[in-house]
Length: 309
Image 1 (cartoon, rainbow, N blue to C red):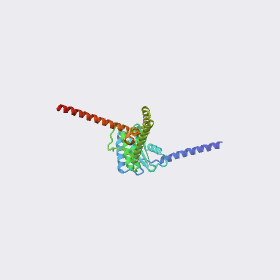
Image 2 (tube, helix red, strand yellow):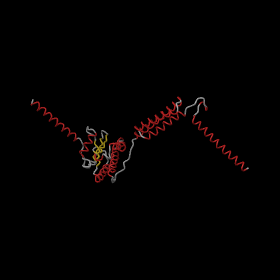
Image 3 (cartoon, rainbow, N blue to C red):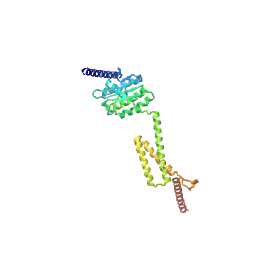
Image 4 (cartoon, helix red, strand yellow):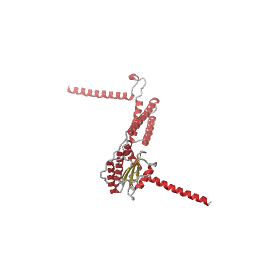
């Protein structure tokens, strides 16, 4: 029994030793900071101008606030996940002030084509997950999709530093203005979504107009159906899209309804067996209006003629 206990203890010791060894090996897979510290371009993607810009901007930022925005590019993640690798880098580099914990890490993995912004607790108020995600989508990712690593990182770095400068209410000398960039494919997708939304809304309005014309439903019932359709469209678009799509879809629905209802032919009518009802009424109105003014002018002329004669 005593021998069995020794074997169990021996196995436990071996497992603990192996786990410690594996943990050390995993931590050694993370790159070490270079002499520049602020720029660690292990994937050789950045130009000397961009590296100097990141260095000089960080020096000004660090002197005023203690905050640091470190850029790291690696060839690959060595089999690790992006989140684990970024967290390990952030800890080993010791980015930002120790007391304020106001550091930011910009990590690019080339082979995996992944990018992550790791933010310290001290800056999570101004650099929320939503804001860093928007910066990646609008300032960084469009460049990276075109393999323009240098401008993508530089543009994203400028946007991050600007947010930190706004938080501390300071000015950074030489800070370049970041620009929002949209990918051509994303613009094409937005246009396609917009056109599909308008077509569907117009089609729905036409269906309601045709039902009103054929079935001769009362105006109150038609208005209720139309309002319900528009309300459902508004709810869906406000959840999935924006207010511009919502307004355009409402206009398309009303136009489709008017085209279907007003544009219907009435049997046995004039103009070759059919006519536009509202257009015909407008024409009659304008003819009567013109006749009215002509008669009035003629009456004034006759009165003036009698007076002068």
